[in-house]
Image 1: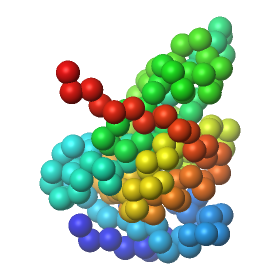
Image 2 (image 1 turned 45 degrees about the vertical axis):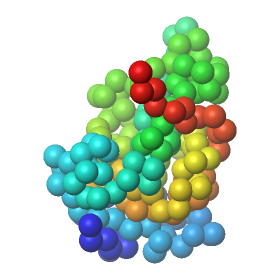
Image 3 (image 1 turned 180 degrees about the vertical axis):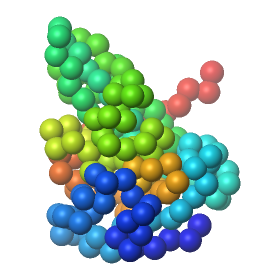
Image 4 (image 1 turned 30 degrees about the vertical axis):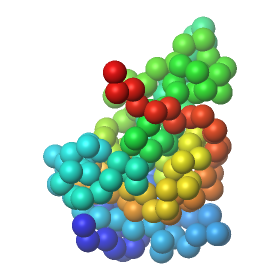
Length: 181
């Protein structure tokens, strides 16, 4: 997988991601550490991507959008977890959103709210009023592969960056082991 500094390839970034990188505010990690790689969009889903590009699940982070509802009010959050885990949507995320019910946001809602393609949604460039919940394992994973906002590319970032993004909240227990039952 050939990488370039992300800002050198704006054609591989969704507009909200490009905007966030242009106004980068993570002083501990220069924006030049954020790399992008063009990929086959048919291989954007994590398992297929890892198999095709020789990446492991424990260095790939998924970003899921969760909708939490209480009465008529819906609140959103993004969750970044390693691909070896699943976000604790009905426990930790539901409580964080002070919601009675939480579930993955519908695809069309997630796409419209983020300005990103489904299957490429990333913690970088999300709406400013959303909490970005990050599992500590992502921070400890070294460089991780995440979405770029588009299905035809991926970002490669130091995992610690995700805990430094605006509205990021490192959330112990967010990533739950995947059941093998």
